[in-house]
Length: 276
Image 1 (cartoon, rainbow, N blue to C red):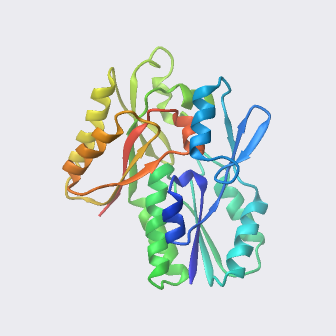
Image 2 (spheres, rainbow, N blue to C red):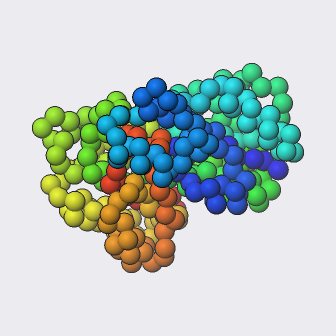
């Protein structure tokens, strides 16, 4: 069987990872002088407590080449016939580079590394599709093809409560037009070309959330798979009800963890979707 590896920026819940036998390689989160391996040394709850309760801006670091080599060795030992790796966008993280370098030096079972050009739940949706293709008995080339197509057809559209955390972390990309006197707006972002892109800005939270819902309404009939991403958003329940009404079914809910949360900050709310 082909096995799937992704990184901890995918924001998939542990239950889904276990159900589909998806292996996670964790990034590192640093608070001050202390490093935490995401999903091993630091839970989502602990991360948000540290971020919201302190004045230290965390930093994130990509996994090492050795971490990916260890993952390849582990899955080979578990009987995998091949491995497909989906990493968060190479435009915002060196994770893809580490996975690729490990694969180039690897002399075991076949490994295919895919630069998803995505992040957070958008990456998570593509990872799930790849895992389903592997479970259906696809060979490594077939699973890699499904994964690549899923990545190309998946998007993210969200509002942040502030751009302050993106600014601090240097991940603001082409959304830099928001910075300066506009830090008090409610930014609308998308993810294009593998990086954060400015999609709009409004003055109130309600208008920002309505904009995300309007975007989803404009996709009616074209969405094959839908998820909601959030980071401690107080208005999550109402948003989920509105999304279900627009889409006609319950979306997959994904709580933003340390890697994306470091840069998105609290209050992020949005949709990720795979186009049909």
